[in-house]
Length: 201
Ligand code: ZN
Image (cartoon, rainbow, N blue to C red):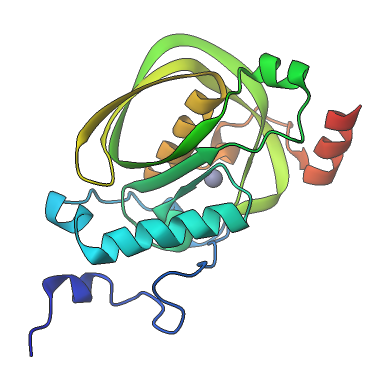
């Protein structure tokens, strides 16, 4: 019997609901969120295990109505991120403009390197699927560049601004043991409910 080298890598995956279902999102306090994630090799990226993991992360992100999900958030300390920001129905045209928020189709970011293209920052409330009931104001660079691999292992350069740049910075932080609450302006943390009330006003 041949046992693939990768099976041991992913031996901690839940066996009963694997592979293509929603995975439970790890909550703040779990040590995996405070661990440097390791990069993936080309061979790993092209493996069925990682392709299945990407699919499961996509399902999990969509079910949680998030705009990004990093592998540490589902308990895997790997430099792997999924992003999709298409539903803006809760924001007015003016709020979208203010946030410089545009539709971002689904895509995968692997082994990213972040470069700040413009030091000027924008400050907005930001939330996280691993800290579900709160939001805080986080300054983020307005314009960035990310060099990474896509789900096929191809080298990709992403130029991002506005909200998309914010999402990328937030998710890449997850790979570097950082949460938005580490960067939030002191005293800005409020409940999500309070934030949604503010948004409606
Ligand atoms: Zn997050």
